[in-house]
Image (cartoon, rainbow, N blue to C red; front, side):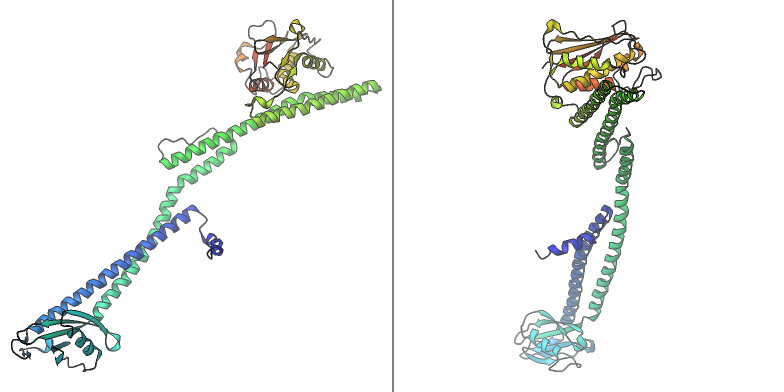
Length: 471
C-alpha cells in the first residue's frame, strides 16, 4: 500500500515510446543476468584461487613433514642441507607443544595463536587470519603420524597476490558487464526500431488512406504473422472507415438532392407572391404551400437520418401502416401546383385506381411511403410530355404502385445503371438532379422488404413499379 504514491512517479519516468520501453526492459533483464553471472563467476574464481593456495600450503607441509622424525619416543626436527625456505612461515608442534616457529613471529602473534589452534585439532584443516596491516594469511595444518609421538606441521601463505587477482577479475568482469549492457541497449534499440519500422510505415499509410477513403489495403501475403494480423485488422478498420465515409457522402448527397425540391417550391411561391400584390386568399394559399414544403423538408430529414442511423437494415426503420390511396392522391395534388409543373410538361394528370375500391394498406408509415414513391414520381413528371399515371394495386403479400409517363423513356444503354448512385442518362438535359433519387427509393424500399423496379419493355415512355409489404 505504501508503494501506491510512487506509481505516478514511475509512470512519469517510464519511456513514452514502445521502442524505449522495450529497450528498458531488455536493459533491465540484461543487467540482472549479468549481475548474477558476475557474482557466480567471481565466487567460483575466489574458491578456485583459495583451492590453489591450499594446494600450495599442503605441498609445503608435505615437504616440511619429511624433515620431522616421529619414529622415536620424542619428535625430532631434522636439519636439511637447505632448510631456510622450509622454515619460512612454518610451525612445528609436538602434540600441543611448539617446537619451531618462523623467526619473524612471536609466541603471542595472531598467526602463532591461529596455528596453535588448528594444530590442536589433530586433523588436517585450514583457516584464514588477518595479519599485520590487515593482510590476509592462509594457514593449513598437516598431522605427521609416528610410532610413539605425533607432530603437526602448520604452514602459512600470504593471500595478497591471490586477493589481487580476484580483485582484478572482479573489476574486469564489472567493466565487461558494463560494456555488454551498453552494447545490448544500443543493439536492442536498433533491433526494436528496425522491427517497428514496418508498423510505423503501416500506421502512416493507414492514416493517409483513411483520410481519403482509399481502396488500397495492406494484405497478408509475405509478412510475418504479427504484421499480417495487424494488416488484417487495419484493413478491416479501413473498410469500415471507407464505408462510413461513403455513407456520409451518400447521405449528404441524398439530403442535398431531396431538399432541393421543397426549397425550390418555397422560392418559387415567394417569387410568385412578390411579383404583384396578392389577395388574402392567394397569400393564404402561398402560406399553405410553404408550410407543406417545410413539413416535407422535415419529413425528408427525419427519414434520411433515421435510415442512416439504422443503416437501412432494420424493418423497424419504417413502423406502422399507411393508407396508400389518400397518400398518392395528396402527392398528385402537390404535383399539380404551378411551382411543381416543369415547362416541358403541358398537362399533368395523376390518376389513382384501387382494385375493387378496397382499402390498400402498406406496412410503412405515410411519410416513408412518400419517400419511396416520390423519386420515381418526380422523374415521371420531369420527363413526361403530357401525362403521368399512378396506379395502386394489391399483389400477393403486398402492394404494388405503378408510375408511368409518356416521355422518351430510359435509354437501353443506361438501363443497367439506372439505380446506381450519381448516374444520369444525360447530365446536360437541362434538368436538375444528382442521380440519387431512384437509388434512395430502392434502398428505402428494400430496407422493409420491398422493391423499386423498372419495366424495360414498357412502350412508350417509362414505367416504374414500387412494391411494399402489406399493412
